[in-house]
Image (cartoon, rainbow, N blue to C red; front, side, top):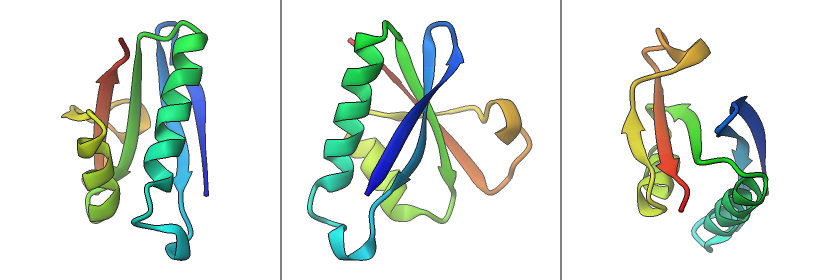
Length: 92
């Protein structure tokens, strides 16, 4: 399993490279990685996280909804990507 963050704007980090091998799915691993990435982002003083996934990635979409992300307008390089869905979460 893996995940990363990358600065998008001064107050915003982008979640990148979220992936869990099939054998590790549905065991809470992705949520644990996501929580750690969010904590790291908070430690670096980011106010929010954004991310992109594919419209057909139902497990990923479910993961992000379950972890407090909401759908936003596609941003940056995904702005006109019809097969992308973008999410955002404000960090407290």
